[in-house]
Structures are given as C-alpha cells and as structure tokens.
Length: 152
Image 1 (cartoon, rainbow, N blue to C red):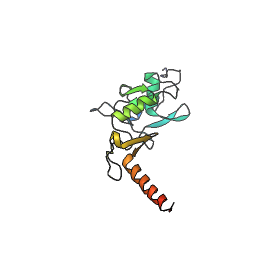
Image 2 (image 1 turned 30 degrees about the horizontal axis):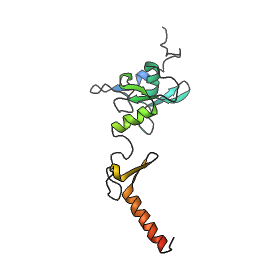
Image 3 (image 1 turned 90 degrees about the vertical axis):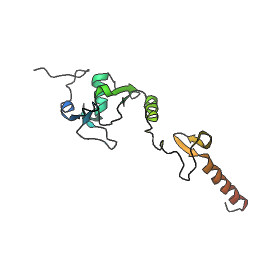
Image 4 (image 1 turned 60 degrees about the vertical axis):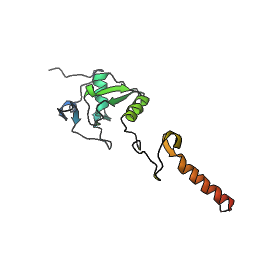
C-alpha cells in the first residue's frame, strides 16, 4: 500500500484527518487536538509545531513557506481547517478581513473610557491605537493650567 504524500513528497500527517469533528451545519472541520491560546489547532508537522489551518492551506491551496502569505478563514472559526473555508492573503488582507467582520481589538467600542464618542472628528490614530481627541484636549488643558501655576 502506497502512502499518501504532500506536494513536496513528504508523507501526509497521520493525525490530520483523524482528529476532527465535522460540523454539519457549517461544514467546518473542527480540530479536536491541541490548540493554542487563540483557539487555532496545532500539531507537529515536519518536525515543527504548526497551525493546522496553515498545514491544510499548504496541502490543498498551495501555500508555500513564504511569511508574506497567510491562511485566512472565511468561516471565522480558528479551529476549522476545511480548505473550502480557507483562502490565501497578505497581512493587509487579514486586517481588512478582520476589520470588515468587526474582529479587531476594541473595534466594537464606540466611546472612550470617559464616555466621549469615537467619531472621525474626535478620533486620531497613533500606529494601530485609537485615541480620543476630547480626552487629549482636557489633559492638555490641565497640564497648561499646572504649568501656569508652576506645579510642573
């Protein structure tokens, strides 16, 4: 009996297709094995611990070892490795996908911690962090008052 091989001629990972539950409602192949802190399935593949959805993208979608390409989920289920639910993209594609699905950290927050609304006029970005301009103005006014009093 001939062993199945991956695109580079290596034997297919033995545990890959034996370690999932099919979600019949969504079609997701949910990994039952080890998972990382973010819920992505992980297993040993070619001597390294790798994410299962990336292994699936390598085997069935042609993902190479290039760090520029990501295996992205259409289903937004980190434990799913069904190749029909995956697509290849860049980091920019990943961020746009996450943003369109409201999955970025603090993206669902509509107001700052002091209750000011995040509007285009009241928001500025420093790198990937969003800041409230009203809070900035209040802080700057307090500093200015303290300087006038020679406290700072």
